[in-house]
Structure formats: structure tokens, C-alpha cells
Length: 431
Image 1 (cartoon, rainbow, N blue to C red):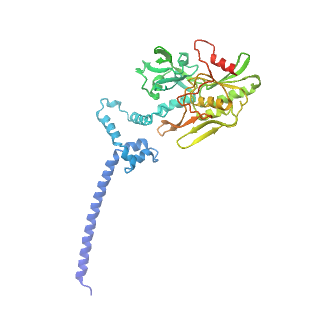
Image 2: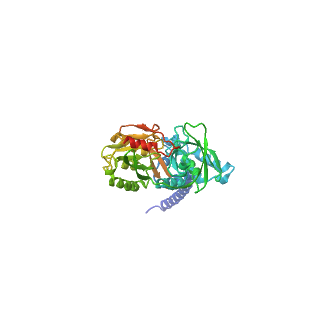
Image 3: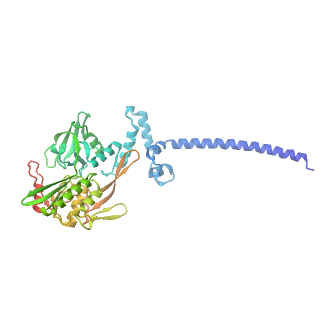
């Protein structure tokens, strides 16, 4: 028979152990609560980054910096400074009504893009991105200037689009825009430090409203003002006319940009040329003041003249790639010369260089603008976009013309004082 005392002692031991377990559980709960509170306080300052910049849920370089405290990148980059400045603005800025969180985030992202010091890599907020899409579609309100930067970083009229208010007012390719005035917008500013986004915002406006541009022209003695009344800019990207000069009949085929309408407009023009090819002496491909556009469009247009061979080569961070003619060649065998000027940039330079290197076509006019890089347009979840320089391109002969331009074979200056197009006439003579 078992000792009853042993039974009672065991029961007492069990009761004591239960009490200890309860104490441990309470202690553990308190510890976990403190840990959760710590994590909440630690991560709270990063919550705005997560909600603004990482909406897709995909791991990005930014999320790595935020979440991987042991990484080398995290040790080199201190995001606390960003939030320190943000909080100081919210706390101390004298005009708190001007603090717009969306604009602050857009500005930070824009600064991030501009930090690479490449004028063609840029962040476009939603409104600016919509305007960019309108440009490629060929319909918007403004003055009709393709904007860019000179080699010295000044805001520049890369090319005034023919038939637009800027063209009619006498703005020329290469004019530096050093000041912009718009009384309705309350703007009268030196534009030398402006971003392209700000320049577009200010220079565009409602139909019929005036804007005053102060221009500095190469070879000019002093700046001068041009008043331009804004209008609806609907740009036909391809035009065709048959011209007779010095006993020759030629197809004057003009491309003003490589946009969304170009392919259909090009097909219509090519069909007409093919129908009359037995009655013409050649083609003058006119890409004066063509600022470029779609990279693929340049390859397709070049392939209408070149039966085989490289049109353009592209070099990105990892690879070199040759883009070959795509076999259309509906205009192959027809003599062709190319008209260019300092407003011919990017995609138009690809076409001009390909026809020169592969077909021996002569370039007539003045040296081209010199843009030898490729940008990829990436759409973002907030309706904005970022244009990133992803590669540089070379002509078939291997030339990289960035900031140099393509020299012409026959140099002819455009004379705005006469009604005669001397550059076109010279191109016809060269044929």
C-alpha cells in the first residue's frame, strides 16, 4: 500500500508547477508585447516609403535597402535623412498649405532620376506623361517646339514643327530659350535652370493665349523676344509631294517625327510613290527638324530602302546587338538623297546614317543634332513614367554620333528670307 503522504506531496508539486507555468506565460506575453511595440516604432518611419514606392509588392532595390539592415547598401545609404528633412518641412515650413505630399514625392523621384546627370533620363509625373503620350500621338496645344538642351545645358529649340505657331513666328532649330514670360501664369523667368518638364508646363497653354520667348541665336548679336500665340498642334508625320526642278521629277517625302501615326501615313505615301516610280527620277527623303521618336520606326523606315544588312547597332550594359533590315524594301533601287539639319535628331539620324552607310546616299543641308542614345519609357503604377537611357546606338559603319552629329556631304544653309527652298533644290540637283 502506497504512502498517502507521497500522494499529497506529488499533488502539491503539481500545483506549484502550474503556478510557475502561469508566471512564465505572463512574462512571455509581456516580452512579446514589448517586441511588437519596438518593431512598430522601428518600422513606422519606413511605412510611407512602402506605401508610396513599393505598391506592386515586388522586391526592389529600395525595398532591399529598407528591409535588409545588414546589407552593404543599407550601411552606405541613410534614409533617416530623407525623413528628417520631410519632418522638418512639415513642422517648420512657413507656408504649410504649399506642402503637397504628392508633389514632394514626385520631386524626390525626379531628383533621383536627374542625379545620373543625363538630360534624357527623366521622371515624368502623371500629367507630364500624358502630355508626352499626346506628343507621340501628334495632337496637343502649345507653340510647336521640340525642346531639348544644348551642349552647354541651355534650354534649346531642337526643332520647330513646320506649320505651327513657333515655326510661323520664326523660331529656328538651335535657338537658345533663355527666358519665358506668360502674364496669365504669372511667369517671367530665366529658363537656364529649368527642367524639360517645367519648360513644357510653362510654354504650353490654352489655345490662343500668348507666350513670350527670349531667344539667343547662334551668330546673333543679342537676345530678342518672340511673341507666340498658342494653337492646337496636330502634326501629320509624313507628307508627300511630287516636285519638278532642273528637268527632274522627284518625290519629296518628308517625315516630321516617328510617332504613332507614322506607319499608316508612311504606307499611304509609299504606295503612291510605287505607283509612280516609273515617272520619277528619285526620292528626296526630308527629315529636317525631325526630333526622332520610336526606335522601331527608324528601323522600319530604313528597311524600305535597304534590302539587307545592318541598319543600326545598339550597345547596352551587357550586350551588343545589330538590327538588320527587315526585308520590305519597297523603295529599293530608287535613287535617294537625304535632307537633314541641326534639328534632325535621334531616330532621324539613324535613318540618315543607315542610308548613307549602306546605300551611299548623300546627306544635304547642315550637320545633324547628335543624339546617340536610346531611351526606354517605363510606365509606373501611379500613371507616371520614367524615361531611362538604356543603350547607345552606332551607325552601320560604327560611328557614335552623340553630341557630335552627322556631317553632311553637301552643306547648304537654309535662308528664311527667301521663298525658295535652296536645300531641297540642291538635293534634287545631287540626284
